[in-house]
Length: 160
Image 1 (tube, helix red, strand yellow):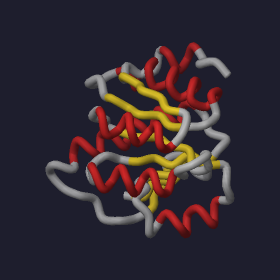
Image 2: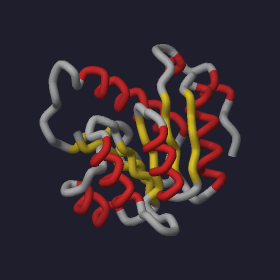
Image 3: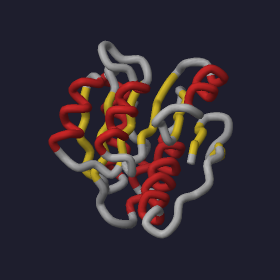
């Protein structure tokens, strides 16, 4: 799963360099996300499980966290909660292959800001990351009302 040349030349590489933490127990997913986000001009750190990801998060500052839902040890729900305890303004994106209905019901009462359903496209990642980072930048001015929106329905769902 390499990064398409089209993605490397994307307009999403514009803007300031941000730090993004990717947490997934699947090395292929970690690599694709890391390479794709790096090609957008971001600094990317990776972790293979929730505990490792939380430790990295506590030792450094990140603008965005992408985490898998199902991982050995700490799952994505608990990781999102722990991250928000330390930094409530850091957006947390949950990546999952689980059923849409069950996940969307649970996300309403969770610390997760955005859900990305597998399979996803690199373009979905680029749009979602840019949207989340733009929203974080504008949060200093105002906070959007809570609702679900779709960037690339039915693949990507945002809870703002």
